[in-house]
Image 1 (spheres, one colour):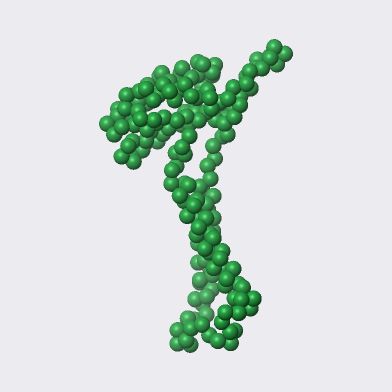
Image 2: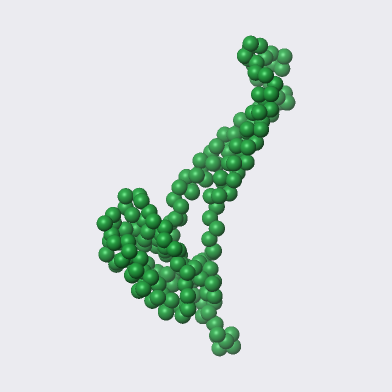
Length: 190
């Protein structure tokens, strides 16, 4: 299933590129300052004396760099997705009589097929996550601009999800529904 947060992949990629550039610049600076890279003689100034900033500028620059680095790290951590993993459910009332194994992702397939037949729906994808005792359905639906979102939501709530609950013998199934409109507007409904 496509991520509900599509820019996350771009954010992670940009963060990685910025991190590589900054690490390369830091390594170059440290190697140059320690004398390992001898590109500029140590006794020669890089800038004319008239352009030298006050001493406090170096300290402010270090503090700002640390704050920006910590904010970038926080940004990177925010990009990770914290969704329950999907997998194989083990269904059994009495282990002595046998067990049934069900691929949770395959169980969501008929729901996707049904939702894609609804008026105004271009595409749908579903991810059944969690365990058989604590499942969660992540459903993404792509619709036309003029689709009746309220009717679509009602049909999903009253037809598709109850049918899936009946097929899987679930009393309750929490649903995270993301409806994407073609003009790039989206409404997150829970």
